[in-house]
Length: 274
Image 1 (cartoon, rainbow, N blue to C red):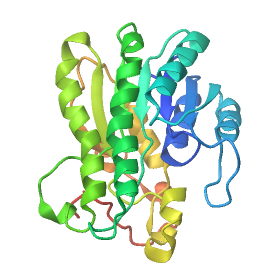
Image 2: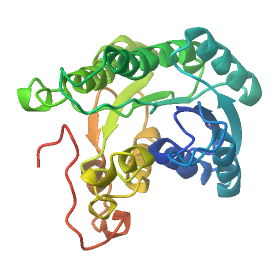
Image 3: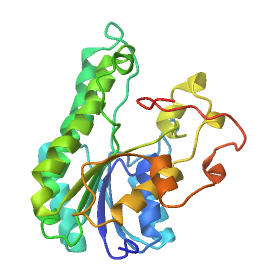
């Protein structure tokens, strides 16, 4: 495909950050964006709601449907998917972007945080994909994209935050399993992960631990996602893509514009070897 015009994207956690950036990039093609997220009231610590995101999508050239959704609620996910499919006539693409993070060791991780990460990251990804499958099977070029890292058993990625790593790798393992499971149906299932830390509201909440000047903007992930989603779903599935690597393969050579503060050293993201 040349672009995503007329395609319907169901994006979890799309009220801000990477999810919103992916939606805005697709909206510039004239896509329909389902903004499935929890935020309906502005929060000073987490700016952006499903309604402000919908306004931005429309201004960018797309159509938007704002749906308040907690992906931990399986029944609510099913209802949101049916609402989205009825509104736009189907679902072509699923972006499993919603994620919970808690970067702490075993002793410092409350059980409720452990449960939250697994319910949102692994279970939420599974439930959302499962609910969208009937519509993806009817789509012309169906894609499922997880914002998840390449899986590895290197202990260095488990040592400092085992609960988060296990929950995030749960999303990665969904890619491994589902890409093989759905290959004959022509449904592509891939993962995308940033090479550098991305400046989002979630990172900002970590305080000075991750200075924004050493990060890239969400647009680099959005452009990489767009490149994946425009590919033939039968020819590109089961891949764990890194945003910069993928964009270099498409011909991008200058990444300066993606930097929050060009010229500053960039921080390599978790799960990526520097």
